[in-house]
Amino acid sequence: MPMSARIVVIDDDPDIVAFLKTTLKIKGYEVTVAYDGEDGLRLLQSIHPDLLILDLMMPKVSGLEVMHRMREDPQMRDIPIVIFSAVGEKTGKPEEFWRAGLKVEDFINKTDMPDPLALIGRIECVLRRREYVSNGEIAAAKGEGAARVPRPSLQDATPREVVRCFIEAWNSQSFGEEYDCLAGPMQGAITRDEYVFRRQQAYAEESASPHRQRLVTVVEEETADDMARLVVEREDAYEKRKNRRREQYSLNKTAAGWKISTVRVLPK
Image 1 (cartoon, helix red, strand yellow):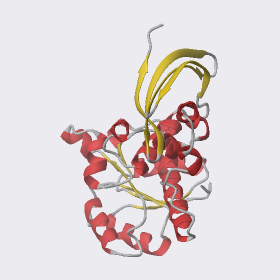
Image 2: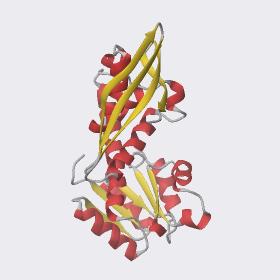
Image 3: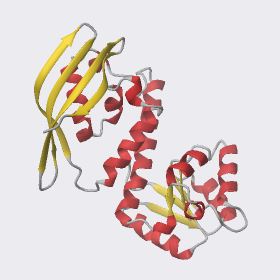
């Protein structure tokens, strides 16, 4: 993700615009602003930014109308959108409700005025997700297979290797592989892309010092036909402390390899 990513901010509140512009420029982003939806649309057509931060309630052309026109325009429909609005506070609905309902990359409640570092983390998540999806599309176009297909090495991995991959994927942000270690019920109702996005967001929220995870040792291991059970000791290392705990993993053998069906933290 280039540090010089181009971001357009459309908001009619000068104080909010100043906050966003200052915060984003400190990180090295190129920021261009508009104070209403009409000027914002013209700006989007001329710049085609890497990301749009958009208010919903504005004069002339509302944020909802801006999104509607963007999605009808082939030149703008692929621009990622982060909504920065007070509408969530007015209705009492959570940010996730608005993000899913508006079908945008993220929704941030502006009445809470997020910490600048937290805001940067969420913006970086959206930009990384865009890069992740783009790389997957490029790989598919070259005939290399999309990134969302499990790697053959994971498909052929032993139960012990799958559990290690699942635990330690956090360290390299290999969240697609982390997802691929899970059986269907463990994946829930979200797609691989959505899972990766949420994990990237969690990683970014730890800011400059993410913790490290590792499988220390396998305490017990049983494998019989298409089922396996492992008890492992894992370690989560933070800046000034290390936490260890034992976890029990149940796995099933599928056509795509061993998959984790349950995880349980064992009492000390």
